[in-house]
Length: 210
Image (cartoon, rainbow, N blue to C red):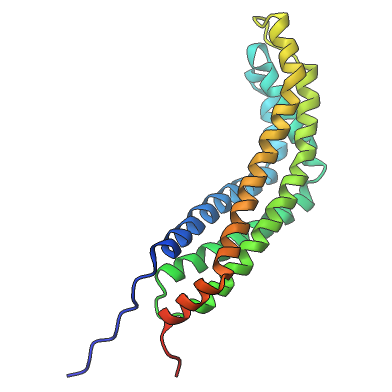
């Protein structure tokens, strides 16, 4: 009788959790990036829908005004932004596959997947940082539009003044915080998988090479 094929031992808990986090973050960012690419390809249709839709009037006029400011700013950078987002989506796909193969190698060496995960995580962090800086231009246009209004009729002068004073700053710091969180997560995970301890554990998991 032939001996059963030995099964790879389980990963330590911290490496397992880190790989799962890579799966979650790369999956979420990758999917949202693909949605953003699709939306950029249909900017004209979105702008036309706002112009002709009921949302451009009444209480929803402010939302429509902000969306138009966003779409106009994105329209001026559609091609370079689309290229950047496609690159980010590809990087996230590599991070996702590498993390999945570290969890379930399927006959592939985990060490190769670890190295791939390290560099693609750092690349995703770099691209997401550029994406955040690029989108800051859009946020600036939205902030300027927010100051100008139009505001809902039921808002009093105090509400309008507060929005004018703090609204642009809130938008700016929200998107900056989001960029820092996502890019920082990719950096931390990439550096974690570059550590000597993780490398030694993964090599031991692969077993002796022939």
